[in-house]
Image (cartoon, rainbow, N blue to C red):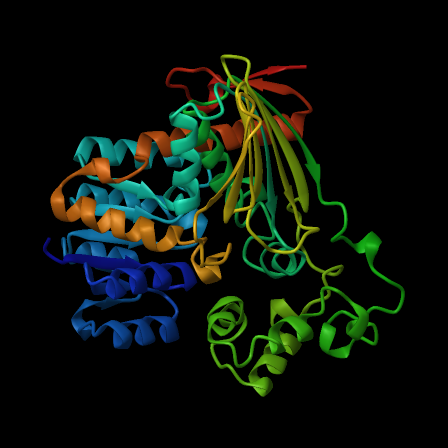
Length: 429
């Protein structure tokens, strides 16, 4: 297969991770970049050998130069996906689009329509579909090893320090500047669950709130910033402990530390904690997204699913229990325990996952597998190499929005099984 040329739109942590995977596997070549941050823009151009005339401060400048590559990686902030996705699709780029697809139904639908009318491949980065672990579960389900799938319990352990980093102090802390946490963090999981069931649910309900990371939980004597707080050594959410502890570890320096400072020294970290958002007390931030949420789903055939997202965990692989009419599966992101009701026998399926659960370590191998599948699909013109398309991603995003509607209105939300719009959800008290 020929090497696929790529334009990188958004050279933040996720964009650079995908670009590096494309380069490392030998199937992709980054030939243009658009990134507003000068340091990230120039360092990315240097890393990939991009000529100065193809280095842009804004995606619209890149688009104004005409089609420069076979495909584009779009990894801008969540609310900035729609403009470049639609414009580049109209120019014939195939698109690898970081999740979430968009932050509103209307904008996600516009992206999907742009992909359809231009007949381009658009893959939303639902990386969990691509892991070896997921494919092992899917094979067991599709082969009937546990009979008919009747119910699923699924946990996303966000991690106490990850919640503090991304959803209390970080970019995704507020709905008005980002989106609800169920969309920004857990659209992965809702998409994954729909993938396992092979269909969208007929109804959803949801409960959750911001319970702990708020002013009422602030201990007496706590300072505004960790660097000046007398309680910091005993606080589980200490910014000093988290970010100084990243120094010397290349993976942790890339993420989460590079979100705090690109200069990886003790002095630079402490300066960033004195002046920037990541040094704030977790009880004195302007965050409003939930720190725990449950979603329950009912499928057209009566099957059910419960999903829990919680900050109050270690950050580790998702955990899932799948209940079938002929068997039971219990998975921890690496191995699966299969119990066969017909024989009483048990089997351990080891998926040999070496990569860790987070964005910093490739989502259990899903990041690499997604990038390689996308590059192969573009190189061969074969969309079957991808495990979802724009229309399917739009459908699973709509389940997320229905769940958020259920949570904020205290209702059960019905989801039509045909094409539907933002206004098509119906609430049942």
